[in-house]
Length: 114
Image (tube, rainbow, N blue to C red):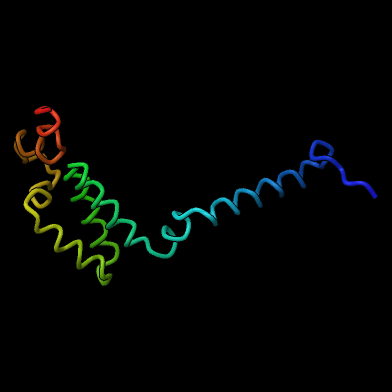
């Protein structure tokens, strides 16, 4: 009995093989597990990455999303603490913010000074 080559395989078996490979790659990904089982941690980590990159407006929105979506999470408590940082707290994203405040929130003023 000979083994057929991949090119001789039926379209359904080729599709099944592609699905198995895709699922295997997603299962090995660090984002696959964390994204499904710890979305609150993922949001908090994204917010902290935004702070490191001086994208305080993104951090503010992400932390607010975390608090509103997972209010009882331990990461919601950490998000509330992080929102006490004046750089993040002042970045409400509203239209009433001054242009200088919006530049600070988006990190434009620090990038312009380079």
